[in-house]
Image 1 (tube, rainbow, N blue to C red):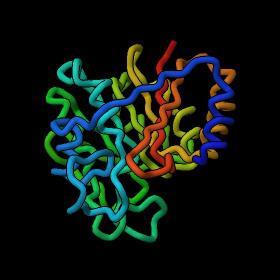
Image 2 (cartoon, one colour; image 1 turned 180 degrees about the vertical axis):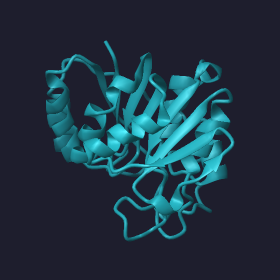
Image 3 (cartoon, rainbow, N blue to C red; image 1 turned 30 degrees about the vertical axis):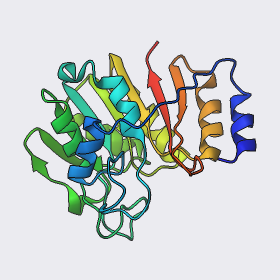
Length: 232
């Protein structure tokens, strides 16, 4: 997002929180991202399976969950990180499918992690991890997913899937009823253009919505933005 676009987006709201911080070199979530190969965060500058700079979501998530990580029991994430380069939003040929699911399993010791992806070749089952096929653009596919999973109240739901407004809004509309009363729903990797679209999407809906723009050293905002949604 250019400075001009950022100012235009900020002008849509009457309140802001500006938080500046030094990098936590002991961030547990970022360390787990390095262990498992997730790009949600990192403590190291090199040696990653992905060629781009890591996001700084781990820094933000540590602030959200460090005080309650033992109280999280049900987690869902759309997008396993396919390494099939022919599929949109691929992590590249060296990507490690399921990386972020393993991060959540290790970070939330009492949680069962459910993941879903359109690439059926990367589905797997591990200790406290279950994965399913999902086309997040298809409401019927989403409905079938929830029937298979059978969990009615997730403490944390993350959309790290296709990264388009259409995909994100479709999954949200057909999944938000699965969010626990005090749960958190997060849409990751939101482009600057889609921030405006989501603002219009949520403007007339009765949710508590935050648009979180995370800046990295010597980099533009790019796609390092989150939308954090809670029920009223």
